[in-house]
Image 1 (cartoon, one colour):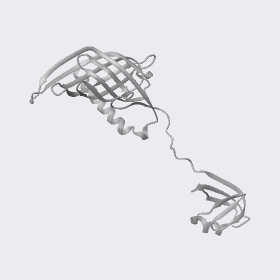
Image 2 (cartoon, rainbow, N blue to C red):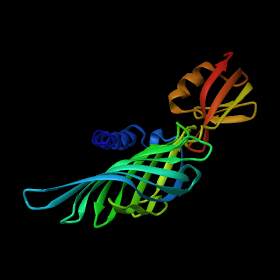
Image 3 (cartoon, rainbow, N blue to C red):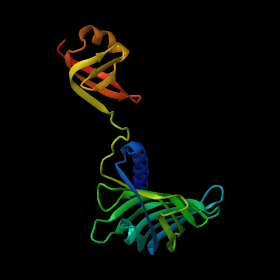
Image 4 (cartoon, one colour):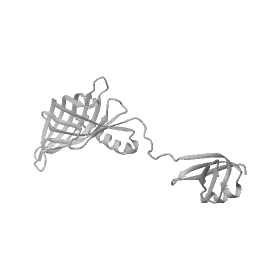
Length: 245
């Protein structure tokens, strides 16, 4: 059990850090808010106590807790938690780390590791893992009233917990919000041409300074051409011209 708890603590550190760095906003394809609550009572616990050099009492408890979770579909079902609490009972502070599994109806379990801070009978922290679909990640603020001997009460995953919300991030696509440039084109004879504009088959476009000398040296009115223009600062602007000259 001790080895498992250490592994869970390492897992939650890796999951949370890796998710934040490798799957930031630019990596999120879809996301939605979820929320759940649960209560879990002690199924089995082992406890040991020690005293620090500054005369503080430390109580270490490894436990398995079972109960019922409810809320969004991925957070509803029988829940099993394995947790290690290391609590300074003199000052009523410590940590509670572990993992939970929710037996989701007609689907794979939702599994997550968690790491929380204990203070005067309450915990708050972060849980990270996967929902019943392997591609869907769960990141949730977790809070609860906690007693190592009896379990978790008034526990929340997201849903306005003291720590915040919970989200599921999954597959999909994330397209740039920047609109595509508006383009137009025309084919026919040049009906008007100057240093600053050109008109072909009723389409008039500004001629940018970088193209003006070349266009006016190669083409003249009545030449048959094809032009392509792009909307720049609200003005049709020539980007390409080709044809007989």
